[in-house]
Amino acid sequence: MKNISLIAFDLDGTILDSRKNISEHTLEVLSRCSQKGIWIVPATGRAVDGIPKKVQEIPGIRYAITTNGGAVVDLDTRKVLKSCVLSNATVLELIGILKKYHAMYDPYINGRGISQPAFIEHMDNYGIEPAIQKMIRETRYIVPDTESYVRETGYDVEKLNVFFLRPEDRELVREELKQVEGLIISSSLNNNLELNAQGATKGEALLWLANHLGIKRTATMAFGDGENDISMLKAAGIGIAMENGQDSAKAAANELTLTNDQDGVAAAIERLILC
Image 1 (tube, rainbow, N blue to C red):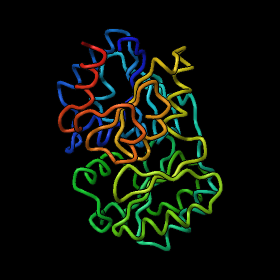
Image 2 (image 1 turned 90 degrees about the vertical axis):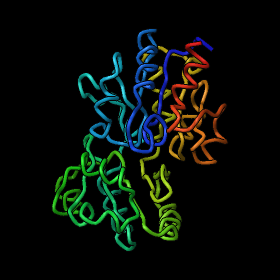
Image 3 (image 1 turned 30 degrees about the vertical axis):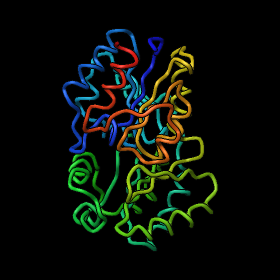
């Protein structure tokens, strides 16, 4: 299978290991792909500012699918090539719902996650593991009050990320949010929900970028592990799920590979492309 021209990969749980690092071996494999003229594309629920420097510096990397397809970004110019955002009014409606629950909510605006001290200083209260806490602290822009910031700036939002301590709260919120029109609800962790505008999926963004680059769908490959990766795994010419992935992601994939702690992305690329 050597006719692949674009490889898209999720970050957390996929290209990054459990400590949020990318191995030197995986970096070397991705660099070899770039040298062969294959586009290497991060496809993440993170905002563009949350993409690790080591990933952005992979030779030849240029484009990124961010916030689950809320924005497709040219990393060289920081120009947003395609966006699909939640309106300011919708986000304020969503925050109004979330405030009824024990939940931490961060809107992603203009390529950056926004949070407030009441959340950042108490992340243990929302069941967030240490490695993710570290990433959040490094990537968030802190404002006094998130809701006030959204209201006063009038900005639309690429994605609204929500963390929960109690699984039952997450399921109650998921059911309530199903009543909001034009909303896509997904998850990448066992304690979060990710809220996007209708049309903002990794799969639709992948197909748009492939078309933008003149690449056929059949010449694309995608890697993922979570619910928010399903659309991409289905859209790609070949979708590969991680062994550590959610069952729903595995069911959507054409193939499975090793876990994110075993360089599963690199292993599949070596087997299918670089052999």
